Length: 388
Image (cartoon, rainbow, N blue to C red; front, side):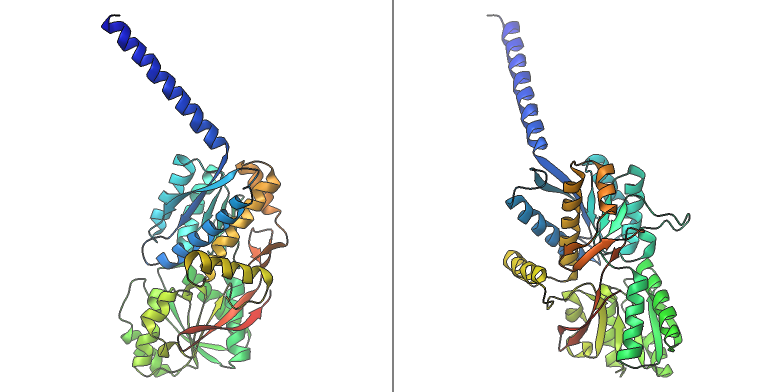
């Protein structure tokens, strides 16, 4: 046998192996449903993103153990937004164009989720946000039309702002508020606006509005100005990194009035940054309390603690719920097809989620309850449940 025949034979054999390997991959892919998982795994909002991913992965582990979705195993293709809106758009592009996912879940920060949804909408891929609460996520700001392929499993800021305002007016019975806003955040600006309208409607007075920017570290000057106004309460609709520093520095200069905020406060890092004692007499609106007494919540908390050796926060349960709602939509759609999944998601009614019964309304927003959380010596304590 000459060299030419040997080389030809080797080539044919190699091609055969390649074809067999390709067939094997195709067969493997036929048995998998790949879902995009986009979140803030690094940057300022990393604790939120990590919890969302943990919750989603627990949901996948549980359903895969029961046979998967449509008889196939669920796998996630992940992407990190680095807690930046521009990176969120890039991460979504990777998931829909490179990883070819037929649906995507994740994200907490509204600015990042809005940027990501612009990409998924253009690709007609359903995207379910775990925790972005700004109304502009699901309703296009320019046209006023509902985004056909964007959904969320959390409540929205008009509801959250109203809950915070009513709590201050009715439960704390306070009248004069100062609002301290993160001007770099769609979430903070939107929530502040909804809170202000609801608080004034309840007979309260907003005596001043001040601002800061994400990643600011020294708040003493603005807090000194606020202290001179002698407010009854300070409303801070921000994220834990800055909120922790604001509360700590406020207590250092003698501000002892209550602080109230939104779900962006929910992170173990908040106590590390602010300290346990400064957080006494502070409250925030949230999606969930680990002290919730329903059967779904108790099972989730037990399974999460077993898997991750820590209690779940609201982001963990939102990630879990987002994944479960997408699994349910794919099952009802009968196929891992973007258009069919979006249709099924829009029809979601009375889904038994850990955070309570979830129905998606005409704007693709979740209609569900909120909770009030109080800090007591560095520990979160359930205060009340508020229904829409």
